[in-house]
Length: 117
Image 1 (cartoon, rainbow, N blue to C red):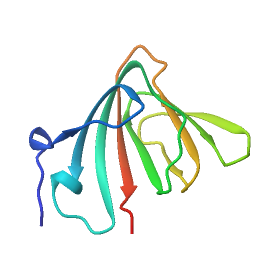
Image 2: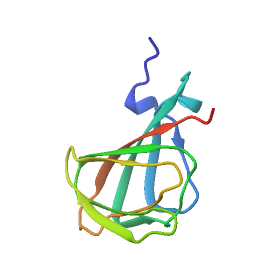
Image 3: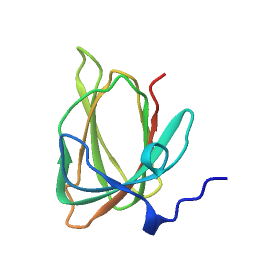
Image 4: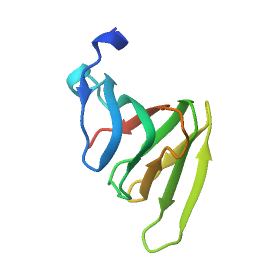
């Protein structure tokens, strides 16, 4: 077993993220992982990401608060949904996504992301 206490989880930055405080809970600099890593983000009111795609599958789980997620398949229309506590979504490889906290309260969201093979 590899244990990471929340207080000891290493912080990280990601391009195109504004108003995010991110910590790696498992994988990468937080410890060994074969297939995926897990991060926890605190998204400040007004925080957002750019609309961008990755070749890797991603899963988001809202822990608390409300988070708007916009997605767009290559060449297709965009779709926006608001996720609330314990709602989740999958972003497919190559699907663009944008996260936005349009509320007046912080949002906590888990990210589970595949490791490149």
